[in-house]
Length: 287
Ligand code: PMP
Image 1: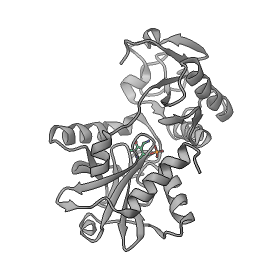
Image 2: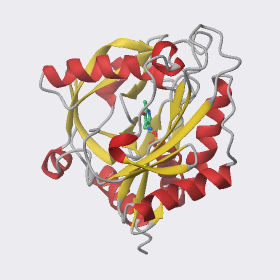
Image 3: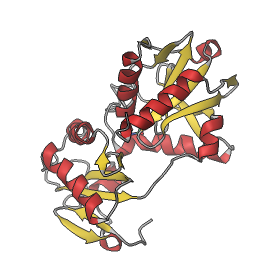
């Protein structure tokens, strides 16, 4: 992915895509001191840009470092990077991390770097796969206890668990994996939050042990505006047999129906498809 044309904003300048290098002793590479965001621009506007920039700053603070740019500055950098690359519809990836000034566990004197890359990325899943519903397997890995790791940060280190889970799922022929939290309750997929439907009511896990997705928050708002009840609670894996529909939410996956999780089966139904469509219109600012 490093050999292509384009411009990446890197520590204050636009650098040609192929030339954005970092030293091998970069702290983040050794100790996981890195946080990032994933955003989408639709027709020239990044959806929920400021909440993403705020989460980036918050994630860095949770890892005990400060990004030397304000939320407004990060917003502007993201927009300028899309413009510089001539893109109106794209994925936006800001990343902030500690540099190579000191390669030891302590990192009190390391420089905080910020980069923003953008690229064309139409749909995370094949549209046909999306319409049929995704096939998920259970991950053998659990989300950590919030006393063990800053589970609400979008921190690179936490994605090791996601990568191992997703690799195994794909090797086994599944689209993604659903992870439990450390207590054994349903948590999230490797890059998305999960919702279930029962008797016209939405059920979704609480946010203490998962990433509080901006898409998740948006879908809750959409549902509530439609008069659909949303119950945020601990969900046991055995309860999946009670639910008729299931879907994932995330910047990349948007709203994507799920057809199976392990032995449980779901039919992409009216509620999932309605939310999928309403979300699609909202991000494109269509009435
Ligand atoms: N959980 C995980 C583990 C994720 O990587 C993502 C994607 N950022 C989400 C949930 C969904 O978050 P958002 O809706 O903010 O993209």
